Length: 244
Image (cartoon, rainbow, N blue to C red; front, side, top):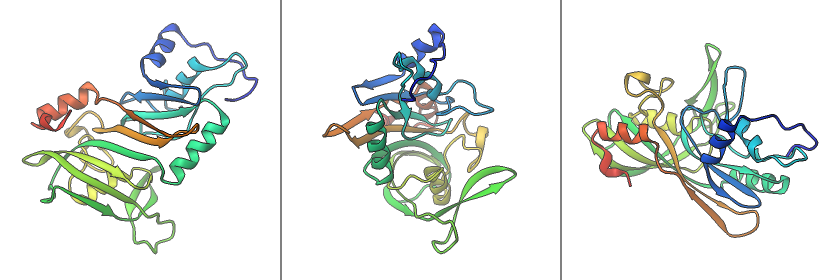
């Protein structure tokens, strides 16, 4: 949506990739199923990002869709972009106002909770460790602490592994990852809050469903199937029965 900008040339392969990830398209919104390993937005150490691929949908005057939320690079699943400035403002407000209903799937390992569902209500604060930002649990009174709530449900369990469904009520950085670590069962492949590649090649977290109010009225609900590496990891852990 930036005005009067030159449109970077995308290779035919990149343009085809952008189209292959598209799961919804209308006049206000584009929805994508972001693959694991693709960054939401570019940076000094980032290769091709979803934001880069949005040039495939640019208009001749240089206006293009823009991100309204992000997923971690290792996380797969539903992402929305806005095609117009009013849509971007509307959707950004929906995410900030907690009007977006998000559902994630995660493969975890550890001391599983005996209950089948519950809510983690634990404030988080950002800290720097070795130049790398991360989130830690914090008392609500601590400076910079942000309230955070995550609903959880066990869809399948096998010994110390489980497939869990997560419904975050807030949108803090790394919220689901930290909350599951605090529950005693970090996400497979999580090198920051778990055992890292000793359990999986990447963070096994998938944004499976997103429900948001639509800028033009009504509600938009998008779903993304789990990628093959997630399904394979679930099968290896004996949790495939929990997947649709």
